[in-house]
Length: 113
Length: 111
Image (cartoon, rainbow over all chains, first blue to last red; front, side, top):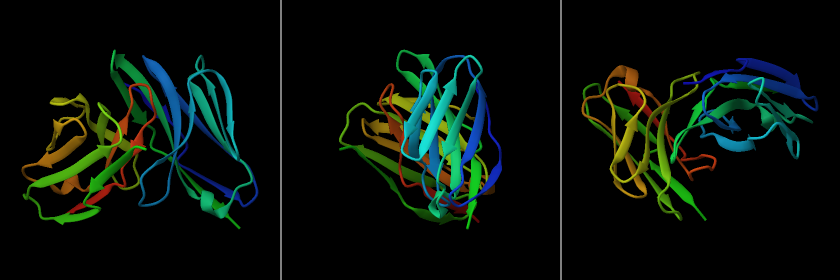
């Protein structure tokens, strides 16, 4: 199984930067995903890391260190619409065609004016 | 393009009643299919996944079951609902090494 830990809540001001950390323990690591979920809606894909380093996609960046079992999601130039829950998810490969994604409990980010 | 459909969007059911939630995927073949549940204020819990027709793996023993009668159809069922079955149910699909795409979800309230 996996242990995926991320902070429960974070608050930041519009225009600021927020970094959401995620640590994990897994036996068959095969990638780390970040999803955004607005209240009452399904999660939507933000980013994917399988190799160490930083992946940048507009205002959002995600970093991975496999040796440390650590990732972060960086949100820049925060906007009010960025208020949402951010889910860290780790994919395990358990067979030739068996990939499972396990989710952390999510970090609720509140952006204030 | 691939799309995933999940219905109904909202459901209120009495304790002890049966349940059937359906999920279908279009625009792809032989997808991996998943059912997740999200309780209020909590993370996503994997309930079932399927890598092919008739192949179901259960992650958590509980009051629910899943079936995959067709390649792109995944059904979540219960014979008798419990109060604790309330939650937000999400269907998702993926390629072998791809990311997950979620359906719009079903909010189930057992009363």
